[in-house]
Structure formats: structure tokens, C-alpha cells
Length: 332
Image (cartoon, rainbow, N blue to C red; front, side):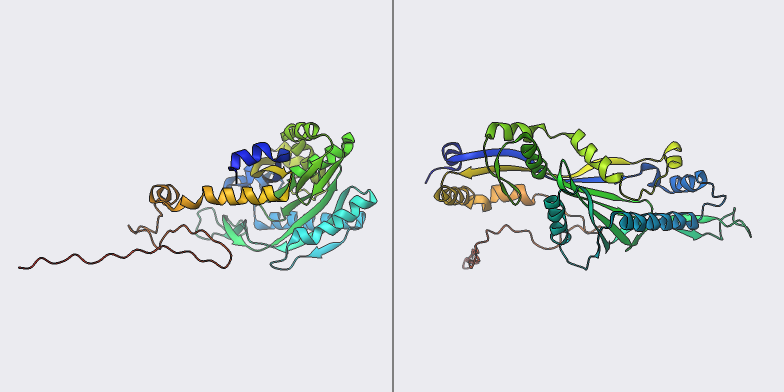
């Protein structure tokens, strides 16, 4: 049996490093604090910045979503708790791909916990008087509907965007770098054999590696623009002129290193070599690197519970025990 490094160097028929899953978080900086919410409502013409203004915006978004569904003639699915949303959406996306349709293919709705703005009448405030109430605002936990918009994109294949209709309007978008690479290979006329999430073989491995290395932020921005052009936008042109606009950050980025061995036995040998290399993970000087940290427990000095490292194998529950004898008492 060879070492991990030797097996990868000598017995791999195809290897490619690629960005895998990408999660993009969207947010409106001006709606992340109480003063920003007040200015948002005042800029919209509300003399009293009350929760009614946000309720009107929510109703507008819901109406626009209904209009989008009607115009696109796409199905709407209510996701139940603990269902895998991507498994439900994927047949719709594959059907659209087979029919050569691009764009929105499914709308899903799900109640999910989030933090949203709530306004309360503050009668104790000095500015409060009859006919001119003063509102205090707080971010509070709520479980509103989130809208999932699933797409089949010409450059990315399957992708989705999730938005909440309640301020501060959190947004989440997700795509897959492997799917982007497959689309680019198909456009370039390079033959390949696809895995569920990756590439098994490619007619031109060098071209595949070059394409995977080319994926950049500009491609992600283009995808966001196409999807957001379809979704009901909480922000209007006037909101943007007033300084409210979207910002985006990469909240999740997975990188995949695909190695295809030239024979199944090589993969088995790699697995055995990798296990052998990590059997001594439980040595004390290495365990300290894993659990050498302090857990804050509401002011208590002691860390609650016990930290442990365990190697798990099917039908095997390894354990390590040691016993010590009490010291012998010297005769007096």
C-alpha cells in the first residue's frame, strides 16, 4: 500500500480543483439600525414613521410576487418542515433545461425564523402626544414566509434566490461552481462525463482546469443581476436615490479537489492510507490543538461538559481507558 501523496501523484487519471457551492448574502446597510429604518420611512413620505409603512411595502411585494407567478406561469410549492427544498426543486429545473427554457422555473414558500423590525408605540417618550405617536423599534425574532425563487440559468444551470418580505429584507442566493463549469464546457464544445456534483472525466482536462480557474466575482454578479431582475424588489428607484441599496458578501464558499483514480483499488488504497495517517490523532499533544479553548458559560469559571475526539467506524465503538492504583500507604 502506497502513501496518500504517492497514490495521488501516480494513480490519478483526472484531477481538477474547482469552486463548488457558493452562498451569497444580500443586505441593505441603511436598514440595519433603528435610525436607518426611520429615515427609510420618512424618505418614502410617511409623516409618522410607523410600522404601517413597512406593512404597505410587504403588501406591495406580495402583490408583485403574485403577478410574477401569474405572468411566468410557474408552479408554487409550499415547503413543509424538514423537507429538502433542493430535491423538490431539482426536477423542475431539469425539466426546464431539457425544454430549453431559462429563467424562473419554480416559486417556493417556507416559514423560517429570522430577525425583523417591529415598531411599538412608546407613550413614555417626551415626543409622544395625541395624534402624533412616537414609535420605538426593535429587531425581534419572527417566523414569516420566505420566498424561494428557483432558476435555470444560461451560464450557471440550477440556482436559487431567497428573500424575506419583512424589513430589513434579508436575501440569500446560492449557486454551484461545478454547474457553471459544466455550462462553460458545453458552450466550448468540450466533451465531459458529469457527476452529481463534479466532473468524472473531460475530453480536454487542461481546458477544464482553465475554465474552473477562470470563475470570478464578475460571473457571480451577473447571475445576481439576472435573478434580482425577476424577484419582487423591496427597494424602489426612489429608495436607491435616497441612499438605500443592496450590498453583497460571500457567506459560504466551498472548494472541491476532484481526483479520479485509474482503478477502483487505488481509491481503496487511498482510503486505507488516509486512515492510517490519522490513527494517532488522539495523542495528547495533538488533542490540545483541537480542544485548547475556553468556553464562556455565563460567568462561570469552569467549562461545562467534556470534550473528546472519537474515531468512528461502522459497528465499532472504540474506547480508551486507563486505571491507576491508589498510592500505597507507608506503614507508620
